[in-house]
Structures are given as C-alpha cells and as structure tokens.
Length: 383
Image 1 (spheres, rainbow, N blue to C red):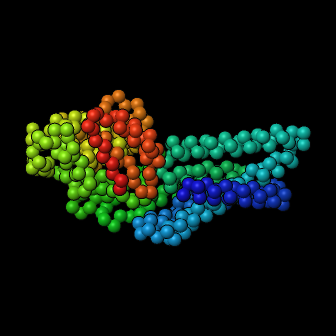
Image 2 (image 1 turned 30 degrees about the vertical axis):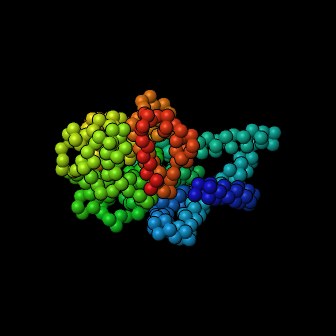
Image 3 (image 1 turned 180 degrees about the vertical axis):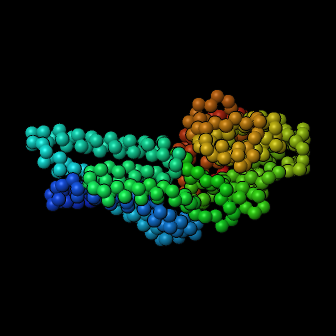
C-alpha cells in the first residue's frame, strides 16, 4: 500500500512539473499561477469528503477478502489525491519562470536554489506539523482542511481581487462539518473515536453494554470489556489458564481449580507463579485487568506504543490493576532495555493487515528467550 501511495504521488508530481513548465511559458503571470493554486486548495478540501465512500468500500472489501473491490477503491482514493498533488507540482517551474522575469540570467542559479530550498522547507514543515501536531489535535479530515485554508489564503492574496477571498471562507466553513467514522459499526454504537500519531481508535458499545476496541480499519477487536465481569469469552481468557498448565509446580497444583468470574482470588486461585509477566501489545488491557482480579500478586509490565489507547483503557475498559506498570513504548526496544526477567512474556502485537516485521524475526525471539526465567513461557497471539 505504501509503495503504491508513494509511486502515485511521485507520478503526479512528475506530471505536474511537466505541465507547470508548459503552462509557465503560455501564461507567465502571477494571476494564472494563483488561480491554479486556488483550484488545488479547493480540491484538497474535497478529498476527505469524497474519499470517505471509497475508504468504506475498501474496508468492506477487505472484510470480505474481495481483492478487486479493495484494489479499485484504494486506487480511487489515490487518484483523487493525485489530482491536487499534480496541480501543486506545477507550482515550482511556474514560479521559477515568473521569478526569472524580474532577475538577470547571472543570478538564475541562485534564484532557482532559493525557490527549491523554500519548497523543500515547506514540505518538511508540513510533514512534521501534520504528523506531530495537527493530526493528533484535530484529526486527518480537519488537517486537510487547515492546510487547504492556508494555501487558499496565500493564493487569494496573490490574486488581489475580492471574489477569491470567498474561497478561504468556504474552506473554513468546511471545517465545521462533523467528522464521521470511516466505517459505521453494524454491531453497536461508536461511543468514542480519536486519531493519534499512530492510528485511528474507536470504541464500540453493544446493546448489552459490552465494549470493543477497534483500530484503523476495524479488522480485529483488540480489547473487550464487560461491566462487572473479567472473563470475556474469547482468547484473552486463555491467558488465565496458564498457571495451571505451565507453571514449574504444575504437578502439585489442583487441576480442578480454575478462575471464575464470581470467585474471590485466594491461595487456591492465585498461585505464586507467575510472579512477573510482560504483555507486549497491551491495547486497552483486557488481560492485564483480568490478572489484577485473579492473580493480584502477579506483577504486570504492560507495554503499549500508543498512550492514547492506554487512556481509553482506563476510561472505557476498566483498566485499573494496581500491580500493573504501563510502559508507553515500542515493545522491542523496551524489551531490549528491560532489566527484569519474566515468568511469562505475552506477545499480542500481530494483527492484520499490520504485522511489525521486527517483532517476527529470529533475533526478536532470541531476545524474548533471554528475558525469560528458567522454565518461563512465551505466549503468542498469531491472530
């Protein structure tokens, strides 16, 4: 997907450079350039609204494993984005042609260097500002609108006419349009959604009060919460059986004793092992919360790269294990620097369509082995 995205952007820029050179020779005036830039700003404003149906179709196609529909929808979004990229690609040669009219050939190289340095600096500022500031604060849709507004204001000033000033006003009004979900849930109400530097987050609540954490396209459920319960009827519960089947003292344990949502934790239900566990990919903390209920003496190091997901866990998923330490870090570097050794390391960081390759290598599993106590166990959700 990233290769296709980058390739289409580069192709659009190349076409824009070529068209910009031709248009610059035909209309070497500032008004024509600013009018074209203003048109590009309008198109950027429309992208998040027109792209939404395509994105919805892409998610549905991915759910149904319909490669044709998925690819077609994705290409549709990329082509939609390529048009304004092509327009903005035309700006550099066009601006250079206009600027050359006001300077002599002896300084043409300096002029070209300044323009390209300025354009690259703008690209750098836009990249960092959107990733680190605007997307976390106002989301992707309004980030598109904000940058379109800035471009429209500059273009309107260059045109020096009254009517172009209406365009920035219209773009600003677009920011008032409510932000909707990429794909509405058919299984409940979306009670929370947010965008972070890492991903799109949403919490879906069903009619019976169950809450589910979904990320990005919603291809998987990453955490479940049931009010007043700790067992959720899914793979998260299987982690709780581990002390009864994998502890070094398993032969002396009572096999009939298993955790129950209604039982009080005690000596029989809270064995000494595991003394310490690490969860790589804690999400909203379904497992960490359950361990706090059934094995309150177990120390839990919960690693989650996205701090906002942890906040969502505390607010919507009852994440309140007092014996848990949350580490807002990337799991592999954190494990590399970790001092303790663990009885259990749980790896729950794989989910389609995103699998962190650096957590699926031989070196990673060697690192996991080195962080286990003798007789320790690694659990992996291969999803």
